[in-house]
Image 1 (cartoon, one colour):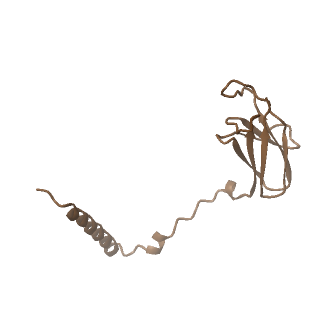
Image 2 (cartoon, helix red, strand yellow):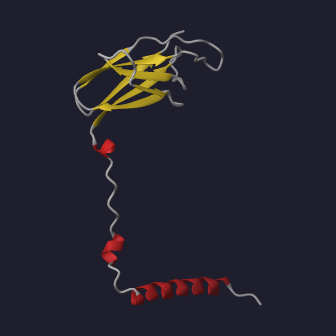
Image 3 (spheres, helix red, strand yellow):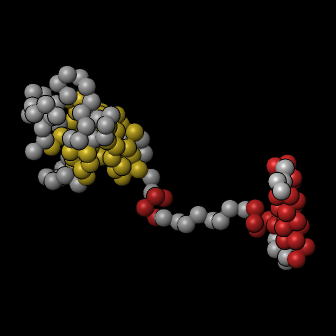
Length: 145
């Protein structure tokens, strides 16, 4: 014996309605407003702070973006890098730095880096970025042959 598809669909709909009615009748103490409101988000002090963004694109000698280059950032008065990330497939990398007046130096670290065709690239020049507040600064690092 086969049951028509429309009967099964209607049966499922009626079953869902019955469950919903049962919940409303047998759980009267549930406040529906509490169910509808989202839970308060957990507070994370790290994400509550304001920040500036240094958005960098790494360009090769042929003016194409370069993937996998280690990019480093330091405050201008410091000697060592405080942040380092690798460029993505678009040659891009973004650093969150504290908001406020400061100068940062950004450069490419090419130790051990080779292009897919085996060429070695030069790091190009360092770029100094001045940040005033919680802003975005876009820069480009141009590598040399």
